[in-house]
Length: 316
Image 1 (cartoon, rainbow, N blue to C red):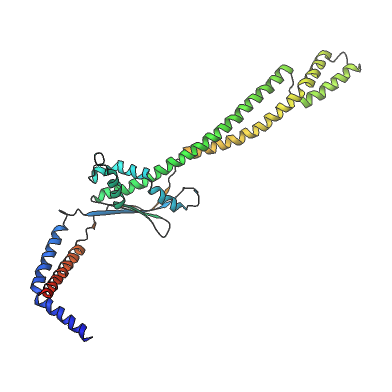
Image 2 (cartoon, one colour):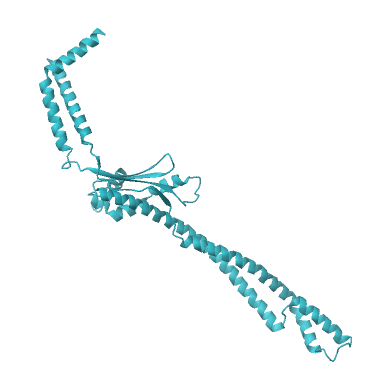
């Protein structure tokens, strides 16, 4: 214990003995850190934030809506849209045309200044830092806008695939219905069969009256015999076609409804975010924190100077 007290006493004695040197070093470090942390050397950064909830993303594998949202924000398509809209390569001073690593540095800068993180309430917090507070605000809005456009594009792609599949099936049913209806019309026109059940019953009544002599004068024997022959030859076809038309009409109504639903989904303009906390233009800089830089630099300089003094004394 006494050794520790002696050590502390010695260190304090050395510090007091060299206090003038330490004060000069500390003062110099403080002045230099104030100068070099000024906007002339370090451009101040401003921050804009927004909080959004995922909406209408649907089910995809076992991912939750917020997990899907985070994946979309990491997509290259979305990043490229934001980069292109705000000309970030020029804004960050990166030559992507002549520098082979330009694109790599551009996306590195993007990830450093733009951050999307998941909150504990399963929402997403968008944070953008930039030297221009208004640009930071615009980029937050741009991220939300392009998130919606990228997801909408993918959803429309899927909706179009569903629409085409349903439309093909609907057209097939429609063509089958037209074909069968035309065949049925031809049977009705060429063979004068309108209603098989009623006509067959009436023909049999007329046929029986004709041949039992009960009403030979009032019956059109030739027409009855001709219609009876038509019913015998085409009655089965008529029934089959008539039933097919009935079933095809049910199928037509079903696929027509499915097509209308799919078309509504395809043309609908949906949004996939609910804005919880809107972004704002903030003129309060978040970087650099000058007092922290000055304090740390001063302490580090004084501490290093004290170590050098101890080292010199040790050599002597």
